[in-house]
Image 1: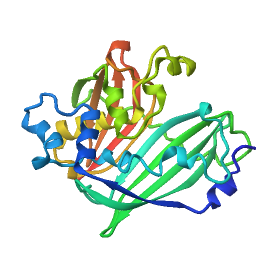
Image 2 (image 1 turned 135 degrees about the horizontal axis):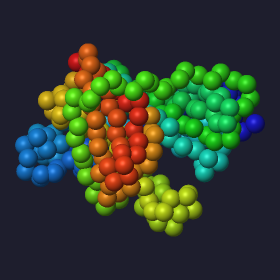
Image 3 (image 1 turned 90 degrees about the vertical axis):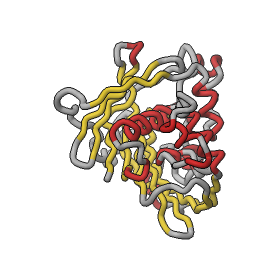
Length: 285
């Protein structure tokens, strides 16, 4: 069996040093669509070094995403075909505001292995701390098609009941034709997002946008629309990747206010609101 759950869970965590500068933060923000309009004071908080703050989803690329999903797929007990791998979901817990520049230790391990019958799900956890203590915890939920069925724990259901009523706010965010080319400079160079021939081999008629780019664009929309632009209010953020996005499309982001949380649903406008992100929650102060 390509995935040995017991061996994967027992494997020693992998640690490495990561570093980032304000340029990395600015580049990430541009990669998720910040800076439009370029002179808007609200946008300058994402692009101008003298006013810079850090959107918490930057944690997914800090240090170029090291140790990252690909590193996790080479952990002991895991031997899978990358063509069968899908990024199913992402969650982030923020322990304190991210600094504009920093050095930290990132420790990655497989926190759970679930048997979904036709697929296995690996939960890859990355915990990041600097000299002052914990900074953030990232969980990536990775589906590996064709690797389930060994009778293991199915794990918790991640599906939520749809939000009730009409959304409190709805915004639309256009995606540039070159958005994926810009976003990939933050460290995800998968050719699926840039090379038309590779995309066709993967079953798409053209390159698709990184799921984590949509993830960042959505969090920015929530912060700017409902949290007064204050990135420090974000406590956690989780989503399930429900569908693809193509550069040049428009995201429709619907938001429902709750007690210290925002429910979010994201669809692609040009494809009749085809679901993109689902089961999405931003918890905040």
